[in-house]
Image (cartoon, rainbow, N blue to C red):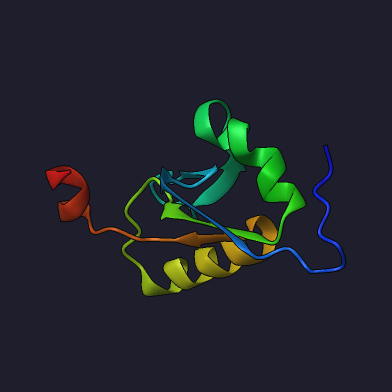
Length: 96
């Protein structure tokens, strides 16, 4: 059912979870790549995320040590997926 807003633009939706709706694949010696995640919360909220002015804030699923790689991933996640990554150190990931 479409949301009636009576001429008022809908507010931005912020989705905050443990993981982004994309998976970061990081092979040794290669640049990390991104692919949409399947199943669970990512699938349940995919349509809502696609239809609204939303941002998804979460961990991308792997440690990224290089500042240049983090910046590239931040741009790609923002521009292609409307996501904001929260990068964790390898130590934070291991302690979690």
